[in-house]
Image (tube, rainbow, N blue to C red; front, side, top):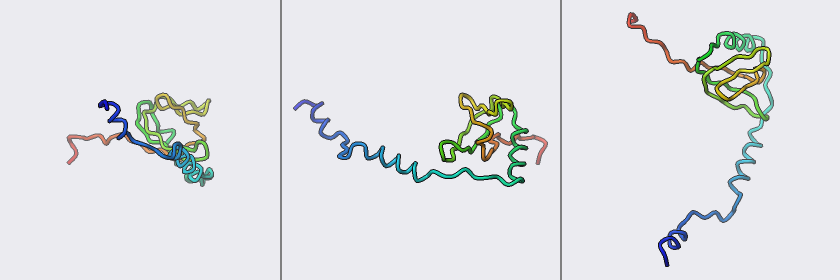
Length: 114
């Protein structure tokens, strides 16, 4: 028996092909959630965070997409208010779908601070 044929007998084997995909699909179905409504205070805080965003700021967004909440971290490229989009690199997130914004900017060190 050749070395290649001998190695094939020890290759990973899945007796139930497609099981992993089916389990992942079921997990996603169970994780589906309804879009949450914001209180006036939460909406005002989110608007303030949106206004404070500047190009080049690194942020983590939590947004609603395909009946689930997802997270995305990236650098702000552009805030298109007229189009209702926040662009992070190649990703475009509708402003209406954003639930949370966290700034991931590092703290600036001042040598005068003690």
